[in-house]
Image 1 (cartoon, rainbow, N blue to C red):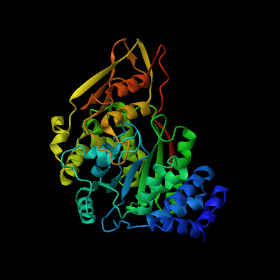
Image 2: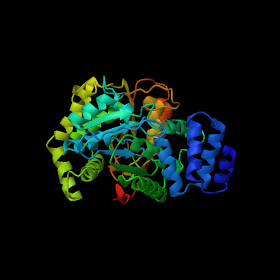
Image 3: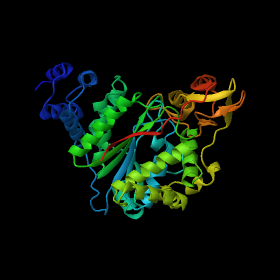
Image 4: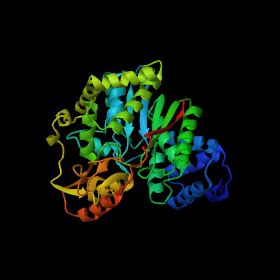
Length: 435
């Protein structure tokens, strides 16, 4: 079996056999296949796609390339939630504690920021002392006691995915649906979950710009789960404007804390409650989805979800007081207001532009080795559909260094569209795919 032959066949749109997929993944993981050949294969997949059988085999090979987590000693259905990446998306800090407060076991494995989208681990690490590098023993103990932990991918969990992910980032193959699907699902299945809720973002601030592509991605991941005997449900949700008002690491922790105290933005609260309800339903803590929704809302209103997050922060070495006293979180030293050039209605807030501007002043990484500034970001003062006066504040940019602030401000200004007519209201949850 020769790598070049498999590259040529995939380039020409042929379906590879399971053993051929295994040959490629094992060879690349063991450094028998060089980067340049795997890059060529990834580009062939990008243009020619993969069959359901190929994607399932690719996922299986990646999850079997390293260790898998055994959570069978912990009673109950293990449910995780994953977002494909958005701007201002901090639902994990709200939905996961609400589901755990209802008795669901939630091993929340998260990632770091990619491109213009924020990373859950980066946001959590803005809490002083918070650790995401828990040992296997610590994970087991915390799940047994609290039913929730937030952890990163270890070097031994799906190492083939780690290598392929890095290569995709520099070869222009990130957006391939088979590659995205297998990457997400290999990590999630390796962590030992029984069920998974997916939040597939679509719009300007998402990797999937069109709903038809988001649907294909959702269907592909649900199909992988079904073939591996896992319950998977996907929500396709709008990401044409940032979720909530806050964009930036510590800023999003503040907003998540407010939301868990039932004082958050409507869109963030609505989506978080629905994701929590889906987790509660798949976790078999409610017989129907309607009952699960009532349960999620109860744990929001009575404060038990917020209490759960504080317990988890303390258990992972973080200062839980920072969720109440925001001065204990990293805070910016400078602020720049962006005002409306005219009166009218906010017809568009380009989420990708807001994410790019936030990253430009330090909230994200341009290169993997870059250091994140947890204090900086953007806070919106308006959302799409709201009426504004000329000169009224649209948003505020928070920064700690003057570098790139002017450029970021120009991008943020361009992100807003003001029109004379009120735009049609856009649905937040567009579709549900799966069980």
